[in-house]
Each structure stands twice: as C-alpha cells, then as structure tokens.
Image (cartoon, rainbow, N blue to C red; front, side):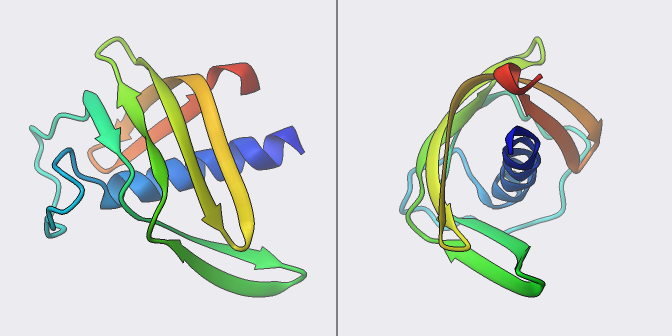
Length: 116
C-alpha cells in the first residue's frame, strides 16, 4: 500500500509540475517547451492536477481543477510538500519532507522522505 502511494505521489507530482505556475492562481500561463535554464527551485502552488490510472482493469482519466497546497523545491535537492487532491475518485494528500533530483530537463524524480 505504501509503495502504491509513493508511486502515485511521484506520478502526481510529475504531472502537476508540468501544469503548475508560480504566479497567482487566476493567471493562465500557456504550456511551452522547457528551456535549459529553467529553474525549479521555489514554491509551486497546485492549480490543476490530472492523472491516468487503471481501476479493476479499466483505464480511467481524472482531473482535479481545485487542488489545494504546494510543493517547495530547495536548492540542495530537498523540499517540502503539502497538498490535497482528488483523482480517480480517491483523495490523495501528502504533507512531508521531500528529496528531488532532476533526471533530464523535463523529468524530476520526487520522493517523500518517510516513504524511503
């Protein structure tokens, strides 16, 4: 069960980071290609979370247009997450310290500290 939530957390955070902005919630910022000098460090507020999953063998998609919370990335590869969302009819919350590593320009591995 813990691994399932850890994997779900990584997927959700990866998806959310593609959709988030550091601006005010009412700002609409178009999705553009990520430049090499893009800086992830900072506090990112959740604005919209989307995900895909399989429930009882049936593929499903889900969108939460009203998630709450944030993820903060510190320069030393650590940070903190505090968010709540509802995806695939399942609530998901994570309030924990995180560690993060940028794998490629558009891929970041995020892991909750208590999940190992």
